[in-house]
Image (cartoon, rainbow, N blue to C red; front, side):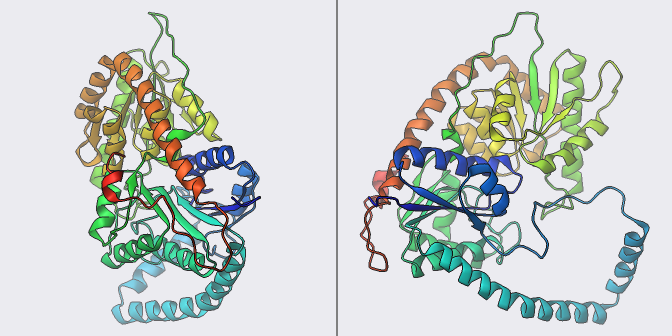
Length: 456
């Protein structure tokens, strides 16, 4: 092993999403343990945030818009009159077909003219930053999809960094990555080609592996848990007096919101908000201690909608507070302090399993259901499109009735996941071995036959 190997950690993290940040946090913790002499370089969304959080050098994973130094903010409810007037003018202009097409064509030409030189300069700087990196580890943040931004967002970013890694003779590892949704076939095919050239590949769920197989990935690819399961956290026992109120955490997600979500279904969004509002109101009326919490800062938007939609709110039964933890540690402590969790985000389900708290998941994608199926909680999931106030309440009562048994099972499940992830970390650490830069890489022992991987 090199005396001081350099490991790059690549992903769309450091973007105000504690779920995305959990994966590099776990990776850095465990690789530092196994390779104590290693130095790390982070490639992420907002380098200043990452460097302050993890104290390692950080660089952008893609070009940022001019003046962009922090994560996206949802628009405020009220816009200035001048903004509304401009919006009305744009709406009228869009009704003129030829004018609309001419404006689109002009914008496309100007965008390409500006982007090409800037992208070429960004690629040159990225190449220079990657030259001294021995292994580039891609993890978390679901990099294998095009649901947000289309082909030129995640698929292109993954491809260009994989190409830079080949030019730099840097080993490339995809570790417990998620895949999908993939809207365009060319996105899926490009991502599959990238995976076929990687030195190590593992997926965080069977659905992700199956999807990439469909698009042409034919190399080894074990299934290991999401890396957040290996965060250094041990859930404390929650002891309640017989008469003490049960504490319930509800995690709303900014899903199907027209300002954020690529597909907007107002009916689904309204039913989702109403379901959470009715559940929170009913639990408060029955004496539960209820709070709303986020794992991403924009969860405040649906939380506010839930508070406003709560029926029969009174001074005695005021809407529950919204809590947005400032760090992963604070989030885990918050989850561990609850008796029951109702979550929507993927990592909300992961944090429920990690803290051994019985969790009911409203699944906006199949990946969330797989997390709870692995923990034996498949009966405590409900599809986002199918959620109603009545169904959510019935599902919650079923979870509450089994909470003590489920909490004990989750403790055992968490230990099993840590053992499996520790083996994967050892495989990744083995990638950092003496290599002569700019020469052919030594074949890696981690590329095992598919039959041997099925146990994972």
